[in-house]
Image (cartoon, rainbow, N blue to C red; front, side):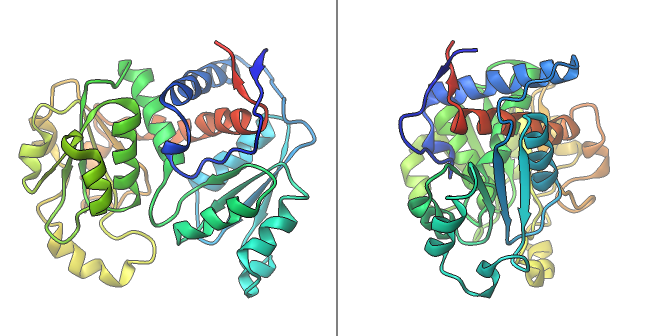
Length: 311
């Protein structure tokens, strides 16, 4: 397979780090890798290469998908928690980046402050992947876009409704609207809006709507996330009151187009942000979406370490 070789170290900290064409290639490549894996074909371009996985936040899907993905690509994934490294004892991020990146081929980081991954990338000799920060979760959006393309084709020109907090998932959906050319309705209560600078950048490509039913009207995809993200658990009761009218249920899905899909990045708090009826319903693609983290990230690893496939 021919590839476009990367001429410098590239990182994936937000969706904006790749061009629209590159993201489209990445989604198509992820679908190809998934198909090949299902057919029992083995493809190991990363044999003898190592992914360092730095976790400051706990994870299920992120750890399993990256670790399994590296194994399927023929490489090795190394799990590093704050308890296992000097980062957890106060070593400067820039020092850790310069050391770790001399020993591995690619790094993924799941942490709190987005500035942490930016600083690590600035001092790293190898590609760095943002596996979630408080500001963005771009790997999840690769899986989400892949899932929509598999189920419905191109998302360009469609309407997506995001219901919930203006958090890292919301910000990533906003970047996705720019990169994949769809309109994004954001249904959230006052006081929980996404970053205002990002809102200004997107202009009329997004709409902030306080009525969930109105936001979901004529939508092709409805998405939600938990009301209290990691680190916000002490706000749970306050958020339950604030988001009481922002649950995705059968009534909300009925406002969307008949063939609309439902997505959730998981884990879900059933009967809070989404009802079990919707989560387990025939419009839900959450399990396919979760599985696609594996294949989308394999395509991402391949692109960053080896190069983008030539089409």
